[in-house]
Length: 470
Image (cartoon, rainbow, N blue to C red; front, top):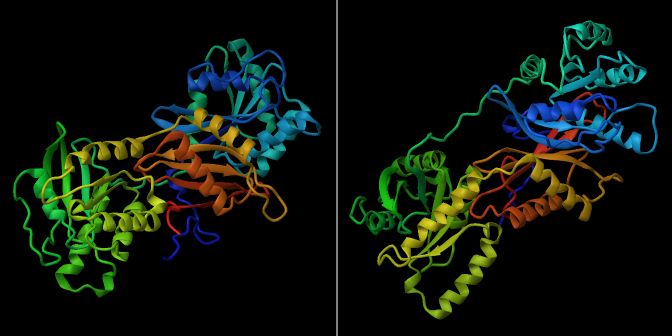
């Protein structure tokens, strides 16, 4: 069986358009960075004390302003030409700045420009990132003149604010959002509202139309022993488990487009279109025959489409004990990499256990919709990396700076790193994500944004599809 790589070729960009912009809050110690973070996220999460250097690690939070969502990264105080703990804190801030889309540089306006501020400014310029300058501790009009001096830093207009009282933070956030990179909105296949949408897929003649008729309680689709009788994608509203679902019955997916002629070719194209319109796919397989390459290909196509997945094994009631034994072996061997998918053993002809489809669909869709808060995700990741660090590559050990969930439907996680993470380690992270957070029935995408070693840009590596099959 061929390999499905979890990584594109070297130089191929990740699906970065889905990643929320990252704003790194940097500055020397005790200028009010954590107070500003608390003000922006609207709750007291960042540690605040009137002691320099309380924040020692990068901490990531979900934040939003005027409907714009972003990831806010709080950093330790940043000083140059320091050693020990202070040097470690400085590197934390440098990493955050180099993986950010926008840098929010916080300066204490009441102190003015220090040598450390000027040194930080030189490093920030080298990142080639937009810099928004926050002149903090301007509590009233009398202090605004102090902020004007900060023009001399040469990073643009200083925004006079009071993180403690909230003064001026709206204008500051307007400037931050205006600095976000322009990313074209990905076309969404989701139809907002209405019943949840299910694509009923499988190779030709496995019983898809018979199952749809059984679920509907009447003959709505033509059923014939000739493979490929159904050539149109037919939408049917069906009530199951007290809820209305929209089923998209499809023509059987065939292994190779180029071998198809006429109506069969267009039926295959319509099947792909049905998957694009669906939220979850039920892959139906006929267990009276050995699992075929076509069955595996159908499952692969569903996972690549990013839809939630339920495996339905039809004609289960026709099996004897020996066939069931060998079938379980086939499933374990050929479908091991989608062991996360709910499985139902049914009979479309007799209706055996078809009621079990509903909880399986609900489980898959719940996982598909799941979002993990950035703070919780990074606490989990910190423990994971401490217990099992990434392997050394080229004599250096890459560090994972922080992570964010770029999107749901399906869950897509982005790791911000200082170097390339090997396939095995990314699979390990995905496996632990599933173990600790669930995601039963949903693909999980994992990609990376790698800090450019020179600090002048960012290299992106990632998977636009899950690494699910050897």
